[in-house]
Length: 356
Image: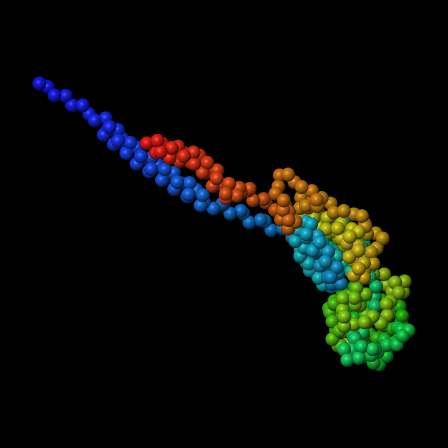
């Protein structure tokens, strides 16, 4: 007799199902680890934004407060950083001629602009007479007796020659426009020769103001705009505009510089109606030649206000025209998009295990 062997199908089927389940579990574990690892990958850091374009503005010391205020407004609306260099217009002109590092020159005297123009460094097309100013006679306010004064009212210019006024502070009459203007007025009044020996010269008009505030000089002659920023001096006399020298501030961009177009745009802003209001609030006189309705010329570094560029993210004014970082989807979206295909695979594996 021959015996026959019949395999037990149930035992083999159970063994096969066990192997399949083990493989499925291993695959599922691997898939879950992959999804978890992908979800933990941080987004690539955005590149650092480029620094804004810098414009070097050389300006008369008397313009400090007005330009500081206007500069903040301009920087807010443009991708530009303004770097101010305040000082005597004569010294600034010398610096420009020596190194030509300025993009814009805002002088308290047309003569200083002429010196720069003679060196072929001025952008002549941008030159403009923008502001006027007024001379005032001032004295320090005595903190112990505010009513005390070296002068009586009505003021007459010969009071400057009183013996009580031992020193008269003026900006340097040889190098500073404010000093030249003061000297011209005193010469017109035939008092210069009498007062010349008493003059205490200042490096610029702000240094002159400081010498009066400290009591180093009993009186002085400065611009009305400078007297307005001090709480330690009072105006004794304002020189009538038709009596004193004509004070004109000339503005111009510099030629042979890398950002002439942007300097011209800034100059147009300084001649605008909004800028004129700021200058007048500080005591300056806006000259008729200024352009009250002029608008800044558009250039590659200007961000038009209220305009949306569909190709860019919405950005602040400080970020205008800086390279945009690549758009990064939120991490939740990254992990969701990575999980989607794997979730389907995991669901299928779990269904398979359930069936088994």
